[in-house]
Length: 324
Image 1 (cartoon, rainbow, N blue to C red):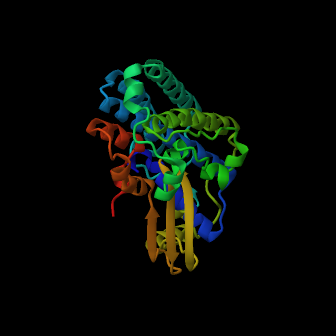
Image 2 (cartoon, rainbow, N blue to C red):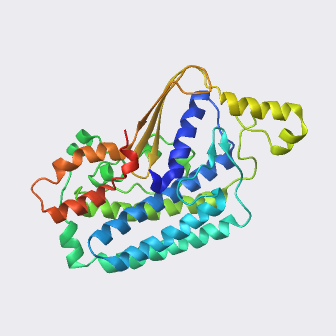
Image 3 (cartoon, rainbow, N blue to C red):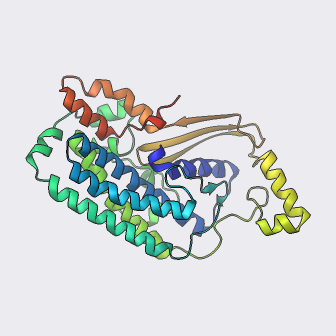
């Protein structure tokens, strides 16, 4: 999912780390939580802005898309790239947060808050908007489970399932936030669940940013983490360490493992088979949009062509998640 690319980084790295039985320092975990939830906010902003634009609501589009650009500016300053970031590494990340990051992050969150408030003010009681999305392409809880839905599309159908709650990782069980669940599973609920999820994600971000501990962001293991450049340039051991990691990779114990992560669109899973070398024998990606798109032809039956456009937008189908 290129709209929330850091989640792909984090989910894959976490799966490999779980295979190896290593745990990140707390500071590294908190950074991953902050960036995961910011990526979720960005993803939902794109989904909702594009959906509203499909309805002709261009003003609302800019209310949501402008703060999305501010969030990408923050990621660019931190990682060096706006869209497809490669900030994570097995065992941590390339570098720590920059000085002044919290001020920049607070500014982004304030702009997102404002954009959400402005948009909801214009659409919550808008008769045209409500008529276009209420009772359109509903998916019952039973149908959603049968289709294999996960994430906001599943929760919009009334199923209270979220890996951050049901199989918590990265201290999610210690953060104060609510599980957002819909009741009708229609286009309206799929969109409104995402609006509320952005507010909950920002609650998590603010808690994590306020309580982030000091310390290292990478584990202290030369078999996994690249040595500092100073060590590479000034010692034979550091140079050899980097050489082996670059050419041989991080050697993962032989075996197979499935790691699941609550990404913006739902469960992002990686099934990895290791032969003990630094290159995986097999990697199978379980991407949520691939599953959701399979159900799309069925749930738009007996509705108008115009409804099909809004339904597709509410499912937030990302083409990158369907590539096979």
